Length: 503
Image (cartoon, rainbow, N blue to C red; front, side, top):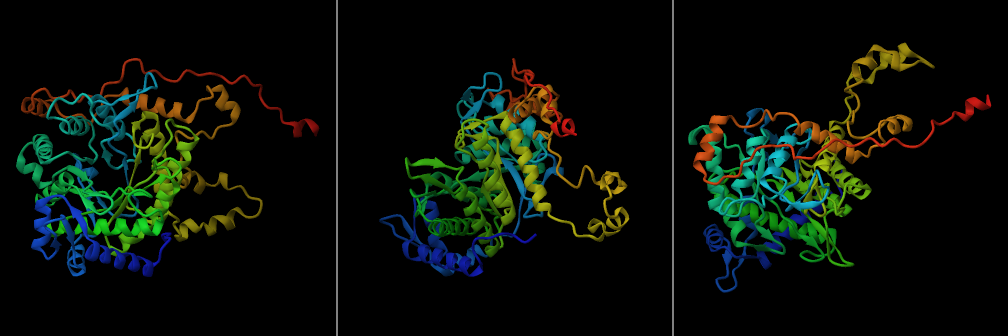
């Protein structure tokens, strides 16, 4: 597939050179003393009075060349391990919303560990998603178990790769201990560590905070799969131009990548961004802006320039409900990312500028994810698929629907949606005139009404619960009162074919 790009190689080179100039002449504020010492050890120039670190271009070039061209997310079930870039983009649910739209009342409330268990169960059955990026927080987490109360129900109920961020190294060690118990031993876990983390060490503009920078170094030093995300806000923490935002983001990614390689050469990373723009009418956070997709196209080009995996938070929305705005904001930027060659897309399930998760929306987003993957499969120009013999055989005024070749291809040649409705209006009306969100909620209900085959074995779960006092239950349980959509038939008579009447 020929990937789309807004910028060419010479412009990517210009962005790179400008980024080196920023890091060498302006530098960045590094609030973590250990990080400042590490930068200094390898040739950077910290200012002891201001905490500004200036990084010579030669130092950046040396260490950024160590970033591997691929990264692997491991899963509890090794059949779901993923190494990318690959032909199809890796697609994850979006993460860490504080709220959830209650599936019974339809009203947003604080999310809990029970919700995480149900979402994990659901994601197991949604084939468009390759990674469960833990979608919500856990308001019911016991003291000192905040991240454990998210990872435990996620890993207990999902056999795909699971990832999210944690607050500090204590929490990370707690979660890694959980992984060792699930694996059966410390040795078994570290042979293939199946817990994946994220962090956001850069606070734009050009600032490394203390905690996330500490975690960047911790993950790298211990060989733990983790990747950072740069999350600038155009007009507030970057210049209000696409080129200016790309340049400062690139400088920030290079700085973080340099520190990661200083901590452990060969540390896998993703050129991963959540670039958003402020709506300058009121300063609103706008992750649904089309410029997010445009910026991701440039990020993909920079990823190819550096020969590293690229990714981004796409398909996010400012809409509070699953409506037309949600549809076009969630459809446009992921598609632009797909045709630009993005390797990793974080997109599923969230509404309201990453503030709330919706069960129906994640099912709809699964369908969008499958469409994106269909786009990336592209055309197969094999002799068989050119179908020349079939065209000759069928001939003028022929009907291809009757051909055996059509029967063979009918479920594979085109994407067959489950949620999108393609029926005649009369059929749709007779079946209850449902919305896409209602159909998606019914599918989520059907999945969660089944036993979760991904659940942990009871002896393993008992060991985990014996290790951690007051641990949340972590079971996937269908919320009481959740029922299928009630059919409401449209009050309309069947349409009359006026052309036939006239004849």
